[in-house]
Length: 217
Image 1 (cartoon, rainbow, N blue to C red):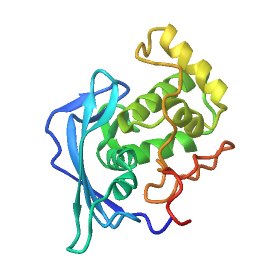
Image 2 (cartoon, one colour):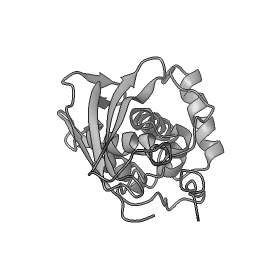
Image 3 (cartoon, helix red, strand yellow):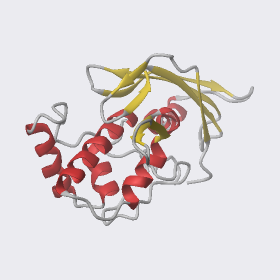
């Protein structure tokens, strides 16, 4: 991969969706990115919370060429990573409300900071682990990231332990929305260090780069 393109988020709706565990996000927003490798133009996507999918989804995507002499072909469109852009932009708009040190007021912190805090936390009581897993699961649906993978990576537990925790969260009624089968593979985004390729310090590896073989490789 060449240098990662910058994603700019804008046009957020004032209405926020509350997923529980203090996790909130705008009902919709837009993101644009230029300078993506192999995409000669500006990609714009609109992202919305989708009640049917129970996660964020891309509702609109467009590509505008950067200059004359460029043709937007189906080959070029295949290089447009809408899901990567959605997850990358969600990391800029999703927040988590957490208890402050002295109790009382709650602090609203960026999702990356929240994930880093959970990750740095060493010892947990079983109930604490359960609640941490639920909040990370809800973050994953907010950023449309495979939730069991994010729970496993962030709590630094195995995927099977993550699955057991989430089954318990669902069956106990603490998080009835939980689905335990893992959807789609992870986009190549590192949720802890966005802008770099996904490379968690976790035992299982991130995905291969998206996209099929390019012509003439």
